[in-house]
Image 1 (cartoon, helix red, strand yellow):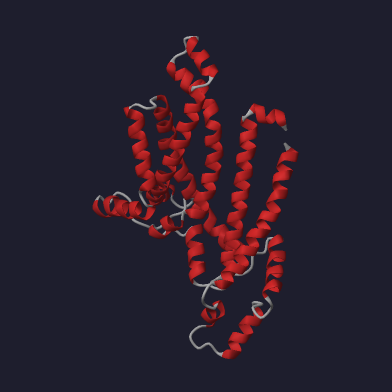
Image 2 (cartoon, rainbow, N blue to C red; image 1 turned 180 degrees about the horizontal axis):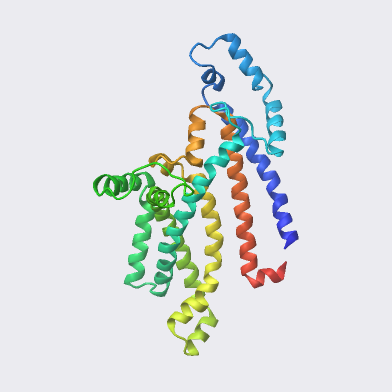
Length: 315
């Protein structure tokens, strides 16, 4: 197992380097000048020259890249031009917010998607299966921004059950924090539940056709014992690995939902950084997102090996 993990980590190093090259050089193609935005309205040439020198914008791009990568390797992702805070500190403030949203969204997706996927597999090619698949297709087709706006109009404006926007830390007020996060979590969890439903259904259908399932039924075991006790235990393996990947997608892809509900998370941080040409923040966020994806892929692979005895025996 240790050799398996070490090999995966070695593969991650060139991947992160490639990501760093792309994010550093491609963002230089964005229109606008961060120094002009930083200097203010007067834009004194002396001040502009001093700022360019201070932040190293006068150096050639390869020199800037090497300096940034060398600092990032030590944990220094630079300073935000907009706020003056260290990028790592900004990420540390915003990332827990998105993690809370992602965990709640995955919880909703599991509660909706996995039982529905099991039901659809058991009732395959019947009315219940067709109905569940129709609902899954509808959930995948509805855009997050439209669903978010409709929920705000219905739940917050008309019924006044939940706050329309904002964020409260769970450490300050847990109940209010859950109230502010439940609607965005539903928006994100709806589409994820459809993805989990389809994968659960597909995996369960394959397992239910196995010989040992027919043997279990021949022994007189109840349908619930066969489905949950035997079939689901083996069908859940690919679902677990998929969950790790979906969690990574949530961390990187909750941008629209956070914008709609005014949640100060990871997605809103990178949107604001792009609009203000805050290069250090963009680079740091993308690099951390890539590292998170790689780590979650590694976790998914390790979980799959640990839960699958046949793969463990091959290591």
